Amino acid sequence: MEYKFVKFEVLLPEEYIETIRDKLNDIGVLTLGHYDNVLSYSLVKGYWRPLEQSKPYNGLVNEISFDTECKMEFRCLYTRVEEVKGIIKAVHPYEEPVVNIIPLLN
Image 1 (cartoon, rainbow, N blue to C red):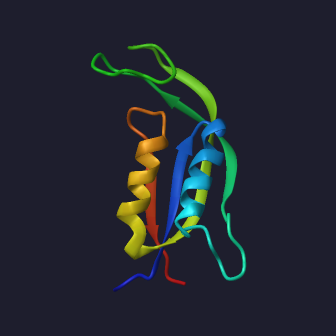
Image 2: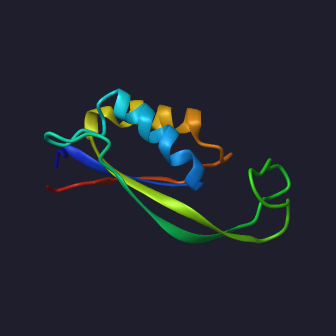
């Protein structure tokens, strides 16, 4: 089955949402009909433990951390996935960002 659109879910600190939003909007990814800058985000809680080889943005090596972060969501053409992943990776502060890309049926 071929998909025209995907949904991106990106976990990140709230202060990075506007920077990523602006870069994605600049290339037209966040346009829907007669609107641009179309995305949503919600606060989520997360756990993680940086292992020995990590260089964590937040938390200490070998200690379990817990904090609030955001889940940013937006729709994107499937053909733009690699370009969008590159922008997110260039701006995102996490060493290992969580980026989920989900095919959409609509």
